[in-house]
Image 1 (cartoon, rainbow, N blue to C red):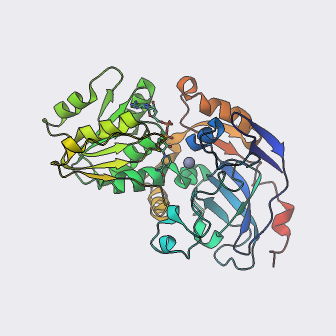
Image 2: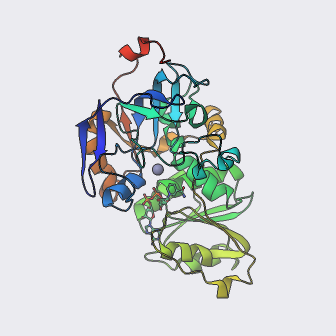
Image 3: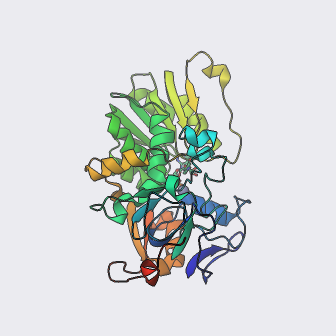
Amino acid sequence: MKALVYHGPGQRSWDSVDDPTIVDQTDIVVRVETSTICGSDLHILKGDVPETAAGTVLGHEAVGVVVEIGSSVGSVVVGDRVLLSCISSCGRCRYCKQARYGQCLGGGGWIFGHLIDGLQAEYARVPFADNSVFKVPEQLSDEQVLFLADILPTAYEVGVLNGRVAPGDVVAIVGAGPVGLAAILTAQLYTPGKIIAIDLADSRLQRALDFGAHSTINNGREDALAQVLELTDGNGADAALEAVGLPATFELACELIRPGGRVANIGVHGHSATLHLERLWTRDVTITTGLVDTSTIPQLLKLVADGRLDPTVFATHHFALDDTMAAYDVFADADHTDALKVVLSGSDVAVHVDPRLAAPAVA
Ligand code: NAD
Ligand code: ZN
């Protein structure tokens, strides 16, 4: 099969690699129908994620069709269309039992395209299938559910739910990339009074308005703290969601918050940030951190099926899976291409009958 392979910092190629097979009887193999690229893939390519070995197939978000199942898999059958989460869950460890799948101790967590071969490929081995994949309701397209693999649950769980966004709240969201925009979408499930989006890029702030933000602040030109205070009668935000991952943006989120408010950090940080306890200690502020668990995928799937959430707005560019190399170029150059998420589509599944579909399930 073909797959997008990481060959060390700065190097990737669309290679012929061995077809994946069942290794553990809790595995399935899927034919990838639709996949996408994430900012984390770019981090790996920059060399920021040393645990990812050269030779790893990248990608951790996809929809696929089951072509093989291990003997102990009971919840899906060959031919099922499934959403593959960026987080795998062993289902047995203490954290999986609390639905903290991101912290899985049994070999799950973020493994696709990180510690094992990922999903920008024609086929993929999916460990712990019973606990880690979600059948896609028949009426929903791949594109309607694809972004539930990562950015939607990330923004919702680590941002909106950790930040305890409530009706009427002023929600300040620092960073209007795909995750910040997903926070704008999912914060609206709680009818906030006002959503304020903060970013350095005017194109991203325009998107933020399109996604439902009420006000925008370009903190490259404007004093974000002064603006937020002005928009909140001097109080500050009820919830501040950090969706960038820089010391400066975390520190800004902590400044914007009103007494009693919540700062929910979503960004992945590579450097230490300063926590101004000398200012915060009197303010009854809650600060949360988190790695996505994707425990809310069933709830988000229901919202999409009921027409309450439309994730297709993230799909700005479409490519054939064969063109994943070109898709990376476009996604990595978002400043010029204005890309949010690229959709990579495998060969036409409706007419293409895979010979493996006809094969009996592996015993
Ligand atoms: P992105 O890089 O595509 O977007 C970041 C946005 O922040 C951009 O619009 C950029 O213009 C803006 N920005 C950069 N510097 C800024 C500054 N100083 N002030 C204001 N805005 C600034 O990233 P993304 O894909 O949207 O992801 C956002 C963060 O979430 C990243 O750090 C990512 O690694 C993280 N993330 C966390 C989890 C988790 O489980 N916690 C999961 C997925 C992604
Ligand atoms: Zn991701």
